[in-house]
Image: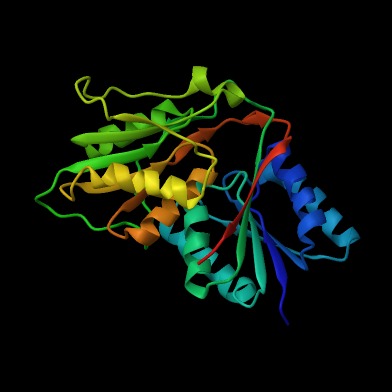
Length: 293
């Protein structure tokens, strides 16, 4: 039997819960699958319990799955098991990535693209971010099955779509010691962007280190912008790409690696995610993307 499945990695922000309720109304799923982190299971529990109750009141099947977000191999394997058991027979998927870790987004898209299941990506902005988002940035790690191709005789270029987590961007530079950095800085003044958008020391003589980029736009135009930036490198660099801005730009980078599999995706985890990461939900600026394979 074909099913409409809503996938939603759990968070503890109001926009996660409210966003799922909106997805339930307009997507009308027959099943809801919630993934959650072992490390933050207590924070997400009240949100998960309320969503479970809502699903039960509407006679929607509700399942949840605990994952070890700290271990990439464990996360990949456990998530793949969920997809094999519950997702691959679906007629349509909506993935609410509002509070999902970026590597989990990339693994989910990797699985779904292989089966070419019709997929929508849903994302809700908050009304306001907290004073800090994360701290104690950990070592960057390559995304399994999307780690690209590296040649030993070529220098490294880091392509980063930036956000508000300065420590994570600094970790990229420290870990990979790139000869070149291309940093797409989010345009607009939403959510205090102009004041909070991060920077990192680059070669002052290199005017092409920074470029304006709309991280909310996942269209082919955004992918083409990135391709043009990389074409300027003339294939002389190993390219590593990271999404540090709003979650929709993780979709853009995934689409980029579909075209250019030699580019490696990296994820930078943090040891401390703010309990007050954001407040509210902005209903008028929802991102809803139909992903075609």
